Amino acid sequence: MKSNFLLSLFSICILLHSCAGDYSPKPRSYFRIDLPEKKYQLYLGDCPYSFDFPVYAQILPDNDKEAKPCWIDVHYPQFNGRIHISYQSFSTREQFNQLVEDARTFAFKHTVKATAIDEAMISYPEKKVYGIYYSIDGNTASSVQFFLTDSTKNYLRGALYFNEQPRLDSIQPVLDFIKKDVDQMIKTFKWKNQ
Image 1 (cartoon, rainbow, N blue to C red):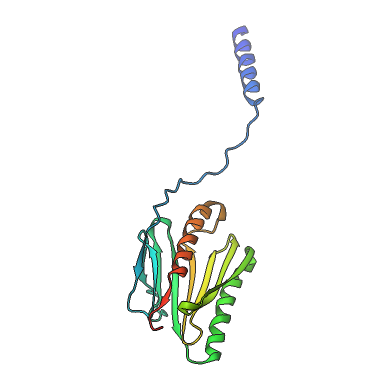
Image 2 (image 1 turned 90 degrees about the horizontal axis):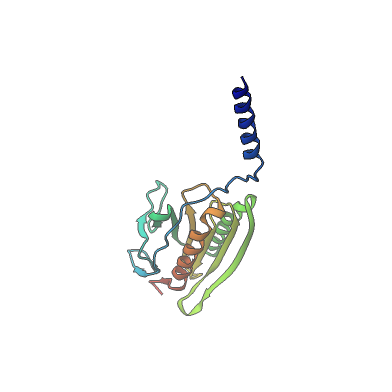
């Protein structure tokens, strides 16, 4: 009987001592992401535009049933993401204005979840490439959108998407990495018919 009492007392002391320590749960962690070396190649294709894209990405045709010719995806298989590119020609000022307004509308659809949306002008007059770059902060479906035009007949829109639930804290390193690819794509962009 005395041994049971001592065993119980010892167990209680151990239990109380183990609970006395400061405990805090470990924060949620994410997989380590190895980012490849930056290297680019030229996309020519059959479309009226060309640009540099990374060697670790693939150019795939847009297979959506509503896709038009020259709609492509710059696919990042290792990051489960893509830059969706849609091209359209226009012939009137009204069509051009509608395309520009559509780009703005698509970017600002993210205001519900966005913490900020910054706009930057794109202007390369020597190549007749103009546009707007939208940087969308927060847990949004698309963090980068842009459009490019020659303002006379060609219009191209791009948007970066990840096939994951948007969690900015987990995708931030990849997002920063791909934003540099988008910048390279825009800097090297050319209209073929200029």
